[in-house]
Length: 149
Length: 277
Image 1 (cartoon, each protein chain N blue to C red):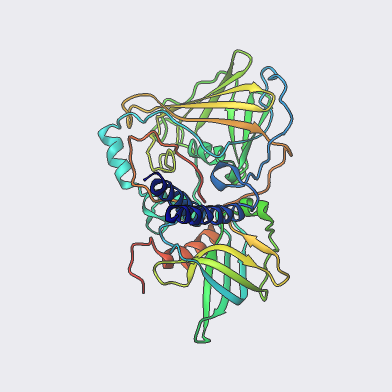
Image 2 (cartoon, helix red, strand yellow; image 1 turned 60 degrees about the vertical axis):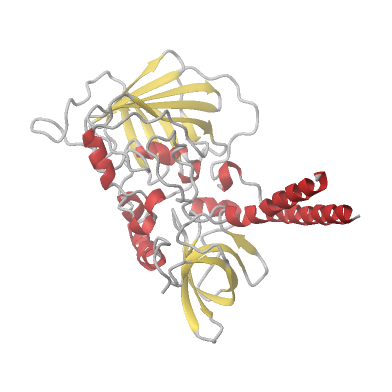
């Protein structure tokens, strides 16, 4: 009996450990929690901005057709501390990109991370999206402005 | 025997899973819920607070607290229902003109913005007869008159001045370590906070900045707005810290970028409630 409980406890804790980071790295209701990968994506535009940087890129789908994508990151002030600069990306750069795609099916999403041609990895801020999930409770002692951008 | 095998498998699974967690978290450690700190604090022990001095660049801690909100008046409730904040409905459905169009944050919403350090800090600079507060985000400033002048009893009415996004402010020192600011005459368009709570033009907002030590300011902000709230409300408490570099990056919300962001990403992505195309 004790062993069974121990197994259940360990499996439960382990499950939380596996799932936790994945969920913690995504916070927007508009985006799927299943990341997709594009290799050999070509940057077409990079907008260094607050509250969100934008990356436009072209990538081929499974059928070899070119798709035009736009994805967002956290603010320039935040990603700056993760190694980004205004010139981290330029049109023509070939990258591998991992992103959380929009549930709507639009070619839009939130960056998870990207890999430059020289192998450098650039990550988004740890919590993607605006984290707006909980129903509003006007009487809650809200910790009003925890930034999840 | 079976129990031992099961236990061993479970332990091995747990070790692997926890190792994944450790690897996933081997990226630079980020405090405050994963938000990096663009305005790094000092790392040495602070000295005592100087008297009557807030001069310098300060940034917020990453989150704020507040007292429970009192009940709103019917007028407050009616206005509140019209506001659709991003954190509730998603940006695609929000009517928050700051988020969608880079409209001015206004006061006191800029306090929330700057209490969240990732969006900017603020600089206190005394000048003759005034304290100037310079805000990193959007590079705006507030002027706090120290000459005892009366604040407007009304705004946007005949015989009275126009309302302002950042209001009219008067300040004084309460003792040697607390700077008190009273503000009124606010433009009603910006929300009080990111949750869409309203504020009226005749609200009085008191900020009390207490310098706790060389590197820490404690802010308590109280709203007195009987048109919309049935009681006075401490709507923001936050500690600000002295920034190491005393230099702010330039940060703007640029309207053309906001438009591009909204039109090319936010609206196509939707709120997550639409069916996939």
